[in-house]
Length: 456
Ligand SMILES: [Zn+2]
Image (tube, rainbow, N blue to C red; front, side):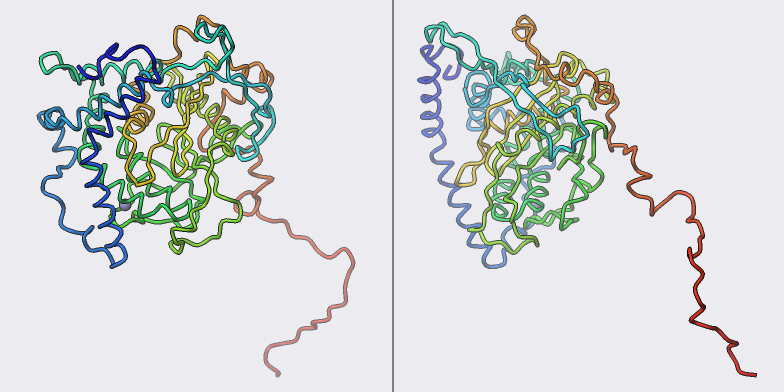
């Protein structure tokens, strides 16, 4: 067994590097063909791409077909390359530093005030613990991604076992979710890579649609997503060359409670999504940016906003889905290269932050372990096992509940859309009682003296 636990000496650095090396060796050939495809694709883009519009690939079944008689589970299992990718993904979420989470303590925040997410401040510190391997010096305490996705880890590890020991989830939602992951990795990954590469230089609103359409909705059991209707340049077809009908909708993505944190999410699914901010002076319009106009997008500048959204979103989920097994709810931030996940559990007041996970490499290939991690996050209601025993034993809390104690009732009342109690004051023009009639304070001469229409 190449990937079994304990195969490598217990030095995670060595183990990680070994995996990378092995992955490069294993995927070298596949990588080369992908690179060639990308080059072909870009050349064709310049010539009014027709290649992309070729008749649908008969070898590419629809998901529904794949699920019949467990076709996808058998097909995937019999492809050693795909299975190896999945095993590397499993190892990443179990052991790699790049796929870990830490605990956040809130030192200070303005969550007691009526602030929109865009003006949210939230100063945090990562919890540190003494580590015996480092002479008891204090380092940030990290937990593996799998530690909070025990149900998802079980689905993955049960499947990749030798055939006579391999199991599939019996619960319908988890089974569909798993089929979607395998289907994506088998049939949709390369198309999605091309779509994203072709739109890498465009502005945020268009990127948002392509990413939601080709990645997020393909991995989530519920493919529905709502994009903030405030986005410029609404489209009803995916703006990449696929020409597919846009599977999401535009709408009111506001959430929260006006006396405390509230505002619009970029994309609302089962989780909240925030796209990293573009530079403030980014020009408007769409579709006219060349690739050298790629705007810098940084997850760190959006960090406090994403944390505020995560906290509000967790309170919202607790209200609308009180029957969830646990309330550790993820929210994600996405830039053009990386994904970060924040988790907030509003019952235990625990806030977690993931590492920034690269999901797309410079040559446009998806980083498969991140796809596995993202898939767990998007389907958290089937796969997330909540806060860990270690967190509970530490008695760790983020301190948010204590900071906002006096305003906590507003967090327990969050709604989506966000109900503004100041509607009447803020927008009197569209509704309410008819306007009153009044007259000038001082009587004026009638300087428009009127007479009959026709002279008699
Ligand atoms: Zn598309």
